[in-house]
Amino acid sequence: MLQASYTEGLLEAGLDEAGRGCLAGPVFAAAVIFPQGYKDLELNDSKQLTARKREQLRKRIEQEALAWAVATVSAGTIDEINILNASILAMHHAVEKLSIKPELLLVDGNRFKPINNIRHQCIIKGDAKFMSVAAASILAKTQRDEYMCSIAKDFPRYDWANNKGYPSQRHREAICLYGPCHHHRMSFRLYQQLKLAL
Image 1 (tube, rainbow, N blue to C red):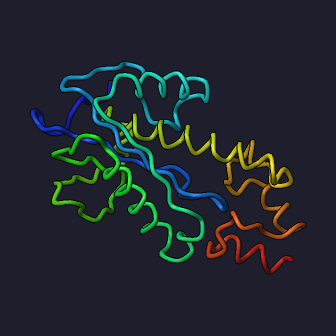
Image 2 (image 1 turned 90 degrees about the vertical axis):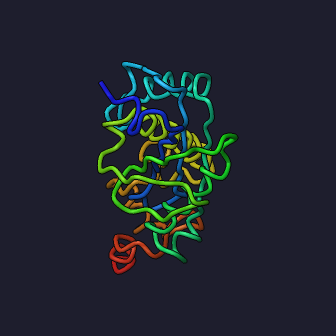
């Protein structure tokens, strides 16, 4: 079972992102604050859950969290400031959108930049250790998947409805055959390798 809190008595917000390793689309980040002592035995890292279970938990999180927010940073900005900085920026935007100011941020991963004088703690694989971080991973993942499916209708050749912008074989082949579109992250190394094959 995941832990309810990192520091008992503090209002904690879990932070996580989705889409960092994609070739196309924005990076999404979410922030979630649960009530003190909140427990849900089904919460887990979004990567360990089926799409159906993620959607079920998304609804529960949105209903039961004290506060939650999701934010994005575009592919163009990712190209300008790199994916690490874009992921952190998306997390900052999510924190700023919260209706309640947290006292501590639990950040999935090992890199972060302070925001609004709020204490933060980076936790490697935090989405598999703390409920609020797992919840943030679920909100970021489900909302990003939903977005990628919506834009896939206008760009069916890239198969985003299935690969969500990740570098699947079909996605890579489509880039080689048809070139990129404005949703692609032109600065990514894999894209540069594929560009040589055009």
